[in-house]
Image (cartoon, rainbow, N blue to C red; front, side):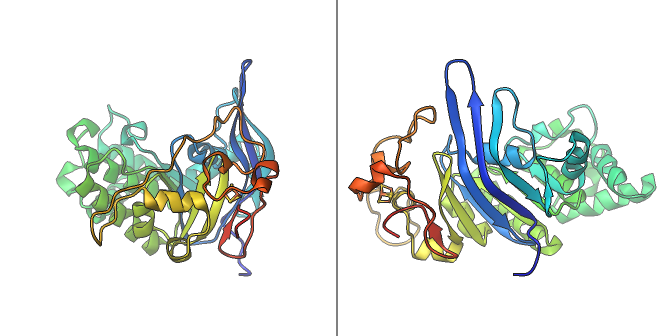
Amino acid sequence: MGMQPVLEIKGLWVNYETEEEIVHAVNGIDLTMYGGESLGLVGETGAGKTTTCLSIMQLVPDPPGLITDGEILFKGEDMMLNTDKRNEEIRGNGISMIFQDPMTALNPVVTIGEQLSEVVRTHQKVSKAEAKQKVIEALEVVGVKRDRYDDYPHQFSGGMKQRVVITMALLCQPELLIADEPTTALDVTIQAQVLELIRTLQSESGTSLLLITHDLGVVAETCDKVAIMYAGEIVEFGSVDEVFRNTLHPYTKGLFDSIPKMTGPCERLTPIEGLPPNPADLPKGCCFSPRCKYKMEICEREKPGTRGEGHTAKCYLV
Ligand code: SF4
């Protein structure tokens, strides 16, 4: 592709450093996203997904957080070399984020309509009446009726609030939308609706979507590509099709074996044995070696590099 990527992460390393210990949260990840793509970043709690997002946004709390190496390019612009002011602009216009808890994005004492109109007016030169009209139209797209314009956030259910937050993120017309577990706090039926909504709006607007989740099912329904994160590394990457059909990394295989299948007989689930490594004391070789049933002698001695092309994995078996 001759196109410039929307996002390029190159060799990113992030620590949380305190007097007692150094937590290695992100350990040398590379990731490239092109316009209109949707990428699922999958991993368990503590795998480094949220730190990756915060790094993209340049919002890693410092201290104790410290980006020790790497580059984060948004449309070719290095966010780490930018002034704070420039990054604020990018966070307002180029990159939007949807969090797990919609209330982090909403002001409880301002009506939904006013908050969204404010967003429109900071991004577009329009009158108050025009802004209101745009907000009403946008809310109708996500299934919120116009008579709720003057309601306050607490008058909305969780699912409805998340719809409002999605509307808010999309009114900024970002090139990159980051959604961090956007449906985890919602009940299952609402989850599916909200995901469907994100996917539709994303494909219609041509926005790139980075979806953070622990749920492979969510990725299958929403994304084109998937990156599997474990102990701060991307251990497998590829199109959803490839990764689901021709899984390469033993950790990814373990993840598939530990989720219930929709089809076929009810089999016993096999959770991956053992626990993820302590990020303050990572194994020397392959990060998955303490739990891997295919482990070889070299695995504990030397870290495997990224192997394969297009569909890649950090494993000697590839
Ligand atoms: Fe298992 Fe070795 Fe592959 Fe690591 S490199 S996942 S220990 S086989």
